[in-house]
Length: 293
Image (tube, rainbow, N blue to C red; front, side):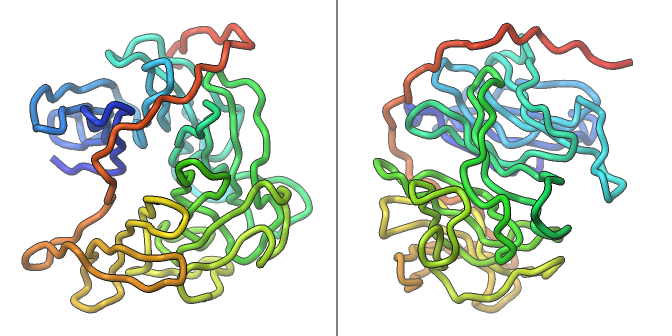
Protein backbone atom coordinates (compact mmCIF):
# COMPACT_ATOMS: atom_id res chain seq x y z
CA UNK A 1 0.00 0.00 0.00
CA UNK A 2 1.13 3.54 -0.79
CA UNK A 3 0.33 6.06 1.96
CA UNK A 4 0.46 9.84 2.17
CA UNK A 5 -0.43 13.00 4.17
CA UNK A 6 -1.12 11.49 7.57
CA UNK A 7 -2.20 13.30 10.75
CA UNK A 8 -2.45 12.32 14.41
CA UNK A 9 -5.64 12.33 16.44
CA UNK A 10 -5.79 14.82 19.30
CA UNK A 11 -5.13 12.06 21.86
CA UNK A 12 -2.12 10.84 19.79
CA UNK A 13 -3.49 7.28 19.73
CA UNK A 14 -4.60 7.15 16.09
CA UNK A 15 -3.02 8.00 12.75
CA UNK A 16 -5.29 9.14 9.91
CA UNK A 17 -3.86 8.80 6.42
CA UNK A 18 -4.65 8.41 2.72
CA UNK A 19 -3.88 5.05 1.17
CA UNK A 20 -3.89 3.48 -2.27
CA UNK A 21 -3.78 -0.20 -3.16
CA UNK A 22 -5.39 -2.74 -5.45
CA UNK A 23 -8.04 -3.27 -2.77
CA UNK A 24 -9.15 0.36 -3.09
CA UNK A 25 -9.50 0.13 -6.87
CA UNK A 26 -6.44 2.35 -7.34
CA UNK A 27 -8.22 5.33 -5.79
CA UNK A 28 -6.91 7.12 -2.72
CA UNK A 29 -9.07 6.41 0.32
CA UNK A 30 -9.02 7.43 3.99
CA UNK A 31 -7.75 5.04 6.67
CA UNK A 32 -7.01 5.08 10.37
CA UNK A 33 -4.67 2.90 12.42
CA UNK A 34 -3.41 2.87 15.99
CA UNK A 35 0.06 4.28 16.60
CA UNK A 36 1.06 0.75 17.66
CA UNK A 37 -0.03 -0.62 14.26
CA UNK A 38 -3.28 -2.18 15.49
CA UNK A 39 -6.84 -1.51 14.38
CA UNK A 40 -6.30 -0.67 10.72
CA UNK A 41 -9.64 0.50 9.29
CA UNK A 42 -10.69 1.92 5.94
CA UNK A 43 -12.95 4.95 6.42
CA UNK A 44 -14.04 5.88 2.89
CA UNK A 45 -14.83 3.76 -0.18
CA UNK A 46 -15.94 4.30 -3.74
CA UNK A 47 -14.67 5.53 -7.09
CA UNK A 48 -13.48 8.98 -5.99
CA UNK A 49 -10.17 10.07 -4.45
CA UNK A 50 -10.25 10.96 -0.74
CA UNK A 51 -7.09 12.43 0.80
CA UNK A 52 -5.69 14.64 3.60
CA UNK A 53 -7.75 13.44 6.60
CA UNK A 54 -7.66 15.48 9.79
CA UNK A 55 -9.67 14.97 13.00
CA UNK A 56 -12.23 17.63 13.91
CA UNK A 57 -12.90 18.67 17.53
CA UNK A 58 -16.22 16.74 17.56
CA UNK A 59 -14.52 13.49 16.46
CA UNK A 60 -15.50 13.68 12.81
CA UNK A 61 -12.93 13.87 10.01
CA UNK A 62 -12.37 16.70 7.53
CA UNK A 63 -10.76 15.69 4.22
CA UNK A 64 -10.39 16.53 0.52
CA UNK A 65 -12.43 14.55 -2.02
CA UNK A 66 -13.09 14.55 -5.77
CA UNK A 67 -16.62 13.21 -5.23
CA UNK A 68 -18.06 16.57 -6.26
CA UNK A 69 -16.93 15.71 -9.84
CA UNK A 70 -15.62 19.16 -10.73
CA UNK A 71 -12.60 19.94 -12.90
CA UNK A 72 -9.69 22.31 -12.38
CA UNK A 73 -10.37 25.42 -14.45
CA UNK A 74 -7.12 25.51 -16.45
CA UNK A 75 -6.16 21.82 -16.40
CA UNK A 76 -7.65 18.42 -17.16
CA UNK A 77 -7.53 16.97 -13.65
CA UNK A 78 -10.31 16.44 -11.15
CA UNK A 79 -10.86 19.06 -8.45
CA UNK A 80 -10.91 17.97 -4.81
CA UNK A 81 -12.58 20.14 -2.16
CA UNK A 82 -13.35 19.94 1.57
CA UNK A 83 -15.80 17.38 2.95
CA UNK A 84 -16.39 15.87 6.38
CA UNK A 85 -17.57 12.46 7.55
CA UNK A 86 -17.92 10.25 10.61
CA UNK A 87 -15.10 7.89 11.58
CA UNK A 88 -16.97 5.06 9.82
CA UNK A 89 -17.38 7.07 6.61
CA UNK A 90 -21.06 7.88 7.22
CA UNK A 91 -22.73 11.32 7.08
CA UNK A 92 -20.50 12.75 4.35
CA UNK A 93 -21.05 16.50 4.08
CA UNK A 94 -19.76 19.10 1.62
CA UNK A 95 -18.01 22.01 3.36
CA UNK A 96 -16.61 23.92 0.39
CA UNK A 97 -18.09 26.20 -2.25
CA UNK A 98 -14.87 26.19 -4.29
CA UNK A 99 -14.94 25.37 -8.02
CA UNK A 100 -11.21 24.62 -8.18
CA UNK A 101 -9.40 22.76 -5.39
CA UNK A 102 -8.75 22.80 -1.64
CA UNK A 103 -5.67 21.36 0.06
CA UNK A 104 -4.36 20.04 3.41
CA UNK A 105 -6.92 21.06 6.05
CA UNK A 106 -5.76 21.53 9.65
CA UNK A 107 -7.72 22.65 12.69
CA UNK A 108 -6.78 25.90 14.40
CA UNK A 109 -6.85 26.23 18.18
CA UNK A 110 -10.17 28.10 18.01
CA UNK A 111 -11.84 25.20 16.16
CA UNK A 112 -11.84 26.64 12.63
CA UNK A 113 -10.45 24.64 9.72
CA UNK A 114 -7.49 26.23 7.92
CA UNK A 115 -6.67 25.12 4.38
CA UNK A 116 -5.04 26.20 1.12
CA UNK A 117 -7.63 27.31 -1.43
CA UNK A 118 -7.01 27.56 -5.16
CA UNK A 119 -9.02 30.64 -5.97
CA UNK A 120 -9.52 32.35 -9.33
CA UNK A 121 -10.33 35.66 -7.72
CA UNK A 122 -9.59 39.25 -8.65
CA UNK A 123 -6.68 41.61 -7.99
CA UNK A 124 -3.94 39.06 -8.64
CA UNK A 125 -2.18 37.44 -11.57
CA UNK A 126 -2.94 34.01 -12.95
CA UNK A 127 -0.11 32.32 -11.02
CA UNK A 128 -0.84 33.73 -7.53
CA UNK A 129 -3.84 31.61 -6.65
CA UNK A 130 -3.11 29.61 -3.50
CA UNK A 131 -3.86 31.49 -0.29
CA UNK A 132 -4.82 30.37 3.23
CA UNK A 133 -8.51 30.39 4.13
CA UNK A 134 -10.60 29.23 7.08
CA UNK A 135 -14.07 27.74 7.39
CA UNK A 136 -16.15 26.43 10.26
CA UNK A 137 -16.46 22.63 10.46
CA UNK A 138 -20.06 22.86 9.23
CA UNK A 139 -19.01 24.77 6.08
CA UNK A 140 -20.11 28.21 7.28
CA UNK A 141 -18.12 31.43 7.68
CA UNK A 142 -15.60 31.03 4.84
CA UNK A 143 -12.93 33.70 5.41
CA UNK A 144 -9.57 34.70 3.98
CA UNK A 145 -6.78 34.12 6.49
CA UNK A 146 -3.77 35.32 4.52
CA UNK A 147 -2.21 35.92 1.14
CA UNK A 148 -4.89 36.28 -1.53
CA UNK A 149 -2.86 38.88 -3.48
CA UNK A 150 0.70 37.84 -2.55
CA UNK A 151 2.62 37.00 -5.74
CA UNK A 152 5.92 35.70 -4.32
CA UNK A 153 5.65 33.04 -3.13
CA UNK A 154 2.95 31.89 -5.54
CA UNK A 155 1.40 29.52 -3.00
CA UNK A 156 1.26 28.81 0.72
CA UNK A 157 1.11 25.02 1.05
CA UNK A 158 0.86 22.44 3.85
CA UNK A 159 0.22 25.11 6.49
CA UNK A 160 0.11 24.18 10.19
CA UNK A 161 -0.56 26.42 13.21
CA UNK A 162 2.24 26.97 15.73
CA UNK A 163 1.05 25.63 19.13
CA UNK A 164 -0.13 28.39 21.44
CA UNK A 165 0.69 31.13 18.95
CA UNK A 166 -0.96 33.03 16.09
CA UNK A 167 1.90 32.20 13.70
CA UNK A 168 1.60 29.60 10.94
CA UNK A 169 4.41 27.61 9.33
CA UNK A 170 4.01 26.67 5.67
CA UNK A 171 5.79 25.58 2.53
CA UNK A 172 6.36 28.61 0.28
CA UNK A 173 6.03 27.04 -3.14
CA UNK A 174 5.02 27.39 -6.78
CA UNK A 175 1.66 27.61 -8.46
CA UNK A 176 1.83 24.06 -9.89
CA UNK A 177 4.33 21.19 -10.04
CA UNK A 178 4.26 19.89 -6.50
CA UNK A 179 4.13 21.40 -3.04
CA UNK A 180 7.85 21.36 -2.28
CA UNK A 181 9.65 24.68 -1.97
CA UNK A 182 11.01 26.88 0.79
CA UNK A 183 9.83 27.16 4.41
CA UNK A 184 8.42 30.24 6.05
CA UNK A 185 6.37 31.80 8.85
CA UNK A 186 3.11 33.74 8.39
CA UNK A 187 1.62 36.28 10.86
CA UNK A 188 -2.11 36.62 10.02
CA UNK A 189 -2.67 38.87 13.06
CA UNK A 190 -0.97 41.72 11.19
CA UNK A 191 -3.50 41.62 8.34
CA UNK A 192 -4.56 39.40 5.46
CA UNK A 193 -2.36 40.93 2.76
CA UNK A 194 0.70 42.29 4.57
CA UNK A 195 3.99 42.21 2.59
CA UNK A 196 7.15 40.25 3.28
CA UNK A 197 8.71 41.26 6.59
CA UNK A 198 5.39 42.17 8.16
CA UNK A 199 2.96 39.46 7.04
CA UNK A 200 5.41 36.64 6.36
CA UNK A 201 9.10 35.81 6.17
CA UNK A 202 11.24 32.99 4.84
CA UNK A 203 12.92 30.58 7.26
CA UNK A 204 15.06 28.96 4.60
CA UNK A 205 16.81 30.58 1.64
CA UNK A 206 14.67 33.15 -0.17
CA UNK A 207 14.26 31.62 -3.61
CA UNK A 208 11.48 33.18 -5.73
CA UNK A 209 8.63 30.80 -6.55
CA UNK A 210 6.95 32.60 -9.41
CA UNK A 211 4.71 30.83 -11.93
CA UNK A 212 5.36 27.10 -12.38
CA UNK A 213 8.79 26.94 -10.76
CA UNK A 214 9.64 23.39 -9.68
CA UNK A 215 11.61 22.41 -6.55
CA UNK A 216 11.89 18.65 -6.95
CA UNK A 217 13.79 18.23 -3.66
CA UNK A 218 12.73 21.31 -1.76
CA UNK A 219 11.32 21.52 1.75
CA UNK A 220 7.90 20.06 2.48
CA UNK A 221 5.66 18.80 5.31
CA UNK A 222 6.72 21.47 7.87
CA UNK A 223 5.53 20.74 11.40
CA UNK A 224 6.05 23.19 14.30
CA UNK A 225 7.32 22.09 17.70
CA UNK A 226 7.12 25.72 18.87
CA UNK A 227 7.64 29.14 17.28
CA UNK A 228 11.40 28.65 16.85
CA UNK A 229 11.79 24.96 16.11
CA UNK A 230 10.26 22.79 13.40
CA UNK A 231 10.35 19.37 11.79
CA UNK A 232 10.53 19.09 8.02
CA UNK A 233 11.26 16.79 5.09
CA UNK A 234 13.99 17.95 2.72
CA UNK A 235 15.65 16.44 -0.33
CA UNK A 236 18.35 18.94 -1.21
CA UNK A 237 21.33 17.37 0.57
CA UNK A 238 22.22 14.85 -2.11
CA UNK A 239 21.26 11.37 -3.19
CA UNK A 240 17.93 12.44 -4.71
CA UNK A 241 16.04 11.45 -1.57
CA UNK A 242 14.18 13.20 1.23
CA UNK A 243 15.44 13.01 4.81
CA UNK A 244 13.87 14.30 8.02
CA UNK A 245 15.33 17.38 9.68
CA UNK A 246 15.08 19.50 12.79
CA UNK A 247 15.24 23.14 11.67
CA UNK A 248 15.20 26.38 13.64
CA UNK A 249 13.61 29.71 12.74
CA UNK A 250 16.87 30.92 11.16
CA UNK A 251 17.20 28.00 8.77
CA UNK A 252 19.83 25.99 10.65
CA UNK A 253 19.02 22.33 10.14
CA UNK A 254 20.17 18.93 11.38
CA UNK A 255 19.20 15.58 9.85
CA UNK A 256 17.77 13.14 12.39
CA UNK A 257 16.46 10.37 10.11
CA UNK A 258 17.62 8.94 6.79
CA UNK A 259 16.05 5.81 5.30
CA UNK A 260 18.14 3.05 3.74
CA UNK A 261 18.98 2.88 0.05
CA UNK A 262 16.97 5.37 -2.03
CA UNK A 263 13.89 5.44 0.17
CA UNK A 264 12.68 8.89 1.26
CA UNK A 265 11.02 10.11 4.47
CA UNK A 266 8.06 12.49 4.78
CA UNK A 267 5.44 13.84 7.22
CA UNK A 268 7.45 14.18 10.48
CA UNK A 269 5.21 14.84 13.51
CA UNK A 270 5.76 14.63 17.28
CA UNK A 271 3.86 11.83 18.98
CA UNK A 272 2.22 14.11 21.54
CA UNK A 273 -1.38 14.44 22.73
CA UNK A 274 -3.02 17.84 22.24
CA UNK A 275 -6.00 19.49 23.87
CA UNK A 276 -8.89 19.38 21.36
CA UNK A 277 -10.06 22.82 20.21
CA UNK A 278 -13.59 23.91 21.13
CA UNK A 279 -16.48 22.61 19.07
CA UNK A 280 -18.00 25.49 17.08
CA UNK A 281 -21.81 25.22 17.16
CA UNK A 282 -23.42 24.53 13.80
CA UNK A 283 -24.61 27.63 11.98
CA UNK A 284 -26.20 25.83 9.04
CA UNK A 285 -28.06 22.59 8.35
CA UNK A 286 -25.66 20.97 5.91
CA UNK A 287 -27.38 17.86 4.45
CA UNK A 288 -25.62 14.54 3.91
CA UNK A 289 -23.92 14.30 0.52
CA UNK A 290 -25.69 12.41 -2.24
CA UNK A 291 -23.49 10.93 -4.98
CA UNK A 292 -23.98 12.25 -8.51
CA UNK A 293 -24.83 9.64 -11.12
